[in-house]
Picture 1 (spheres, rainbow over the protein chains, first blue to last red):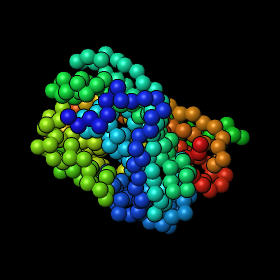
Picture 2: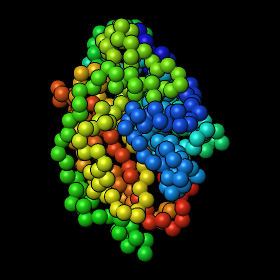
Picture 3: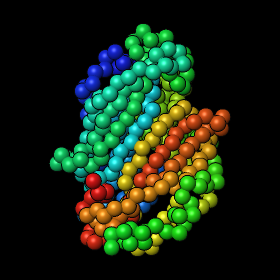
Picture 4: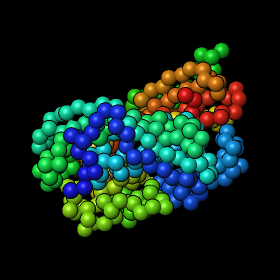
Length: 160
Length: 175
């Protein structure tokens, strides 16, 4: 079983572990290749300046990806990530350290396919090394209520 | 002034496409390699979770095999249609800055190797107001993915921001 957390271990106000990357062309170019996202302002300083930045800047989508990673790493491989969203409010320049943080803001229980399921709503944020909020965001994660329930649900496929 | 400036950002194509679902398009079948490359890029320079590349490990989870990260995109690298500049939502305008304001995803079943995805999209609507960048319009596009079995995979609401620049923006999107 590879849940890192179950619903009974979650409390409102609890924080998830921070998830960070110091980004540069090595990160952006790999992501561009995976996402087929070759946009000049993500690759060339002149194009970044023309687009209103100080130079080339990273993809908003990559920040969203980092938030998904942060939630996955907190909840574990078998958790069901149901929502992730964010806004893009600041450029991500070469050498910036982006840190994804999150806090539990709401919990509830719904009927699942195999029994009750815990829903955990997270408030997320990506900040840079200056503390600037680059991306406020949110997520919704479905978790089994207990470790025992997680074991019982292990064979039941794509939705809890 | 503000209203007229923002109105100029709303094109006839946007008016025509508001709320109208476009034709579906299908992805190529997803390869295990595609998922692995995505995961490596997403986690670079650290090793991505084994769920995304180690089938023996993934088979022991409740997913019963490798799955893609939720934000995986199976629509990259199309053979046709490269070099298109017109947005499917119809809001491209020469000389008007356009920036990515954010996105909100709802996820259903995961994408697995061998899946192919059908996408439909529509321009859902827009709001406009004056920001420190000038008259600004926030355009929301909705994209829905289903897999080959008709199962819901993802709904993404994306916000594109376009503005008449009073001054150079200091941020990618206004607060």
